[in-house]
Image (cartoon, rainbow, N blue to C red; front, side, top):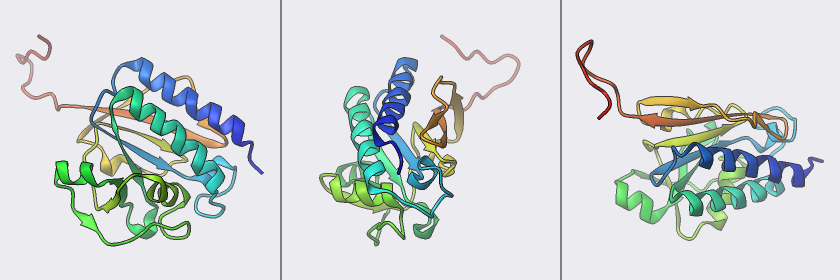
Length: 181
């Protein structure tokens, strides 16, 4: 059994370090997560609601502190659709899809989020300002076009590799272009 307390602390550290970068204020933040990988197992083989619960609570705290809205990515069985609050879906015009994530089709994290958000819906895709990939779940398709990795000290949550990214507008112009005011 995974040490849920240690996983909670790892997640809190990632969230704190991300907040300290100052890059994630408001906007949409994608959480891609394999609870199996966190527990030291192969992705998609050992989902854990107990792990999903501590992650969900830590990312909700992050959301309140940063002002960012959360999107929880489903696994490949639901084509990496995302769980968001209905108000986020409507405000951004995201396409709603018809499915309810469960542990075996969607993943434990998305399933837990769907059960515990205020008014969740599943959407096909988003263009987020940032995100965290816990366990190499491949969130890149849901980030705005120019993703920039953020280097933080916490490199894992449990046994899972962690990558954090923000986005920026594309730099256009060339040699004579000026990019900073």
